[in-house]
Image 1 (cartoon, helix red, strand yellow):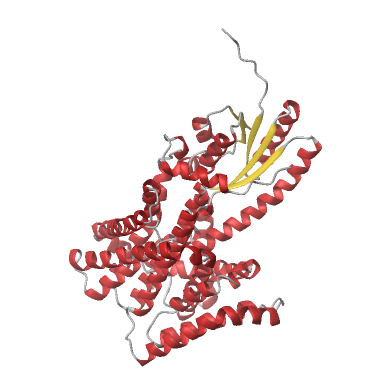
Image 2 (cartoon, one colour; image 1 turned 90 degrees about the horizontal axis):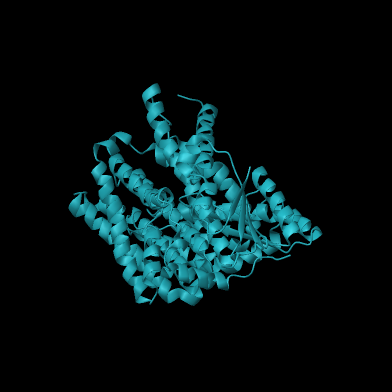
Length: 403
Length: 145
């Protein structure tokens, strides 16, 4: 049994290695950490024949869980409330379609095609219902759509989609007892007052070296997270909603968000993602690769089938709609959070967890990998609608600084 | 049959990534723009890690924007001293694609960029931006070693 500091050194060393790999291969650190966790668990398990990375050690579980909670809060805090106010109708339609399509579709496929029991099938539906706000936003920036009404509505839809995922994760496996009612009532009350109390509190006591703001945020996340777990729910549910309701206030405080990011990336999320990777069983994946392919295809097809008609219903351009539909089919963070929740609560087996994480990684990686391998200069194509929209967007973009 | 008279590169685009090679390319472009009275465009491309993950993605965007903005300050001063009309911009996406797209948008007459030395593995996995720009650009491309 390794002592605490030796185990810490091993995990932080792996985090360092994952970061270097992410820099060299220009991939996200989260993806790199998951892969490093999987490979390290396999190698250390084989070489030392022990529990490998010892991912269920209590303090590692705590750091990893905190990482998931703070990361979820940061994701929620990136919401632009103004977009919601102006485009709520389109966003709600597309976002709900983006959630319910793969949620119900993947649940059905897991249950009827893969013959998973009903609870693992529901978990599968939740894990594969996610989308990635960041991927969609990155594509928008690239094409200049971020300033268009269309782009803003799609971006807001991604938040609705992920909100559906965390609500489903938080409530679908909940026992629905008196505790659940207490959790819901208290949470709603806190969410209602937070946007008013928080700015006042920060103005009165904030801006000091004692990092009152960070402690306040962590207190909220832990308190409501604790209440959620007490009620049988999941701590990331209140974390995401706290992020959303504070997006217009705390989310605008770039200095605070940066400090939280430093804490999150420097210490917390490496433990979360490496731990998530360490539970992936390579032998299970090797034994049933078809299952991974089925889950991956299920996600892509059900997401497309649900989102595309919703996008078209709002008279958005067909080609661009297809593109965004595909981009909405990604989602690494919430996918792994959902799968890990299932494993921790023994809703799914380690093999099912491995299939889900592999499918989630595939949905996040394969589209961009294909795009990079077969580099396609989109602007050279004969006037695709997407390019025309991009040009319109570029005209709306404020001019760069001129000297 | 009429002949076309070359009047110099009127609109020079420099692809800048804050590397020593890009600095060298910028020096060359500034010199050319000063001699030819060209308008100079300098763009920096932020390439997000893939797949983009929310908090990390925003952190990368903010950090890189700040970094490039600080790099552009001395460039603007040098352009002012040489009385060169300069426009700077920061875009997001695949570097080669963004450089070519930007060159098309501003109707650049020349693209200047630095040549970075990559390992075989790096070139195989990620490719070379300068090679891609050379292959797809609609205007002359100068690679500065």
